[in-house]
Image 1 (cartoon, rainbow, N blue to C red):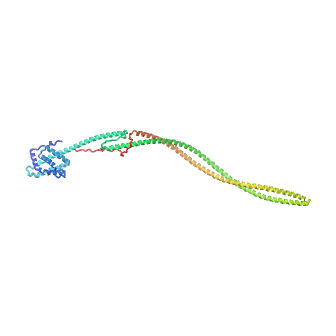
Image 2 (spheres, helix red, strand yellow; image 1 turned 45 degrees about the horizontal axis):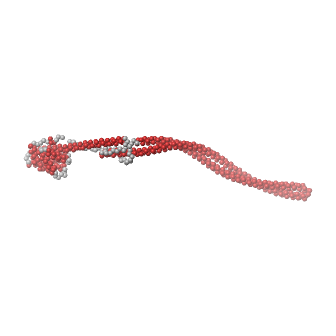
Length: 492
């Protein structure tokens, strides 16, 4: 930008005289004019500060005469910078300087009649002074703004350079951290990043911490998995072996149970046969009981007949006794008769002999009948005992028949139960065979699990993790970098 000092030309002597006249007319009212103008920028202002008034008075003395020297430029630059801190140049021109220029012109017009001189020349001189001063003000305004812009650009450039260096350091630090992470070092942490990317440091460290904790947990769990997998493998092998043994045992048990079933069926058949035999024996025993009863009745009849025979024998004895008496009487009578009675005596003797024989025979018969009666009584007693025994036998055979029937029913129930047990054993054998197959599959799966656990251990061993336990931040993911806004000043 061209220096304003080289642009403003010095006034001629005539112009300086007109300007001096303007100064003479206006300068006494300059304080009131300045106060009204400054209040546009600061309404709370009650009076002009003495130093500011002195500067403004000296400045007006220079511009009213066209004396644009270094003192003027220094004063105006100071005044402009001071006002630029309060108002922008548009507000300064439209509100502050317009009141300043208007006040000067109004004072000049109102007080001109007291002084000699051409009004047109005086107004033109004042206007030239004001416009020259405005040009200087704008020059200093723009210079001030350009200075601010240069400072802002320099600050922005410095900030960009600092941020670029910080970004390079951040990239290098994060790259090293990511490289360590890629190489499996989960203990690496990011330190010393700028505050504006503190979230990046915090999130990376939190992620690394969570990864380390997760990998440590995985490592610990892997050890447990390996131990459990080994235990499961051994248990599965034992289960498979025991299941095979159980299947073989069940097969033998099933075969033995089949034999037992056949034997129970045979026992059931034989029990049924025994039931039939016992039932037949019961029928025979009942028939024998009836025969014994009939025999008892027949013996009782024989006993009654013997009693009747005894009675008849008694009658025969009486007859023999009477006959013997009659024979004796006949012998007595024959003896009395003498020879005529001998034949009758012989007959009587024979009759007596027959009577004696009849008596003896009757005695023998009575004896035999008595013996027979005793034997009949003994026979009746024996037959009664036999009948009682047969009744007991019938009762016992009946009980045996009931027991055998119960045994037969129980044997049939046992046969049915054993048949069902045989079926259940067959199902159990089939299930055991399936379990054996599943156990073999489980054993194979446990071997695969052990292999995978070893592989997982190998993979986890590639990571470097600490031995201590820590609590993670609990937030996953990387935060976006916070971008600061670069302030850029507007250049003129």
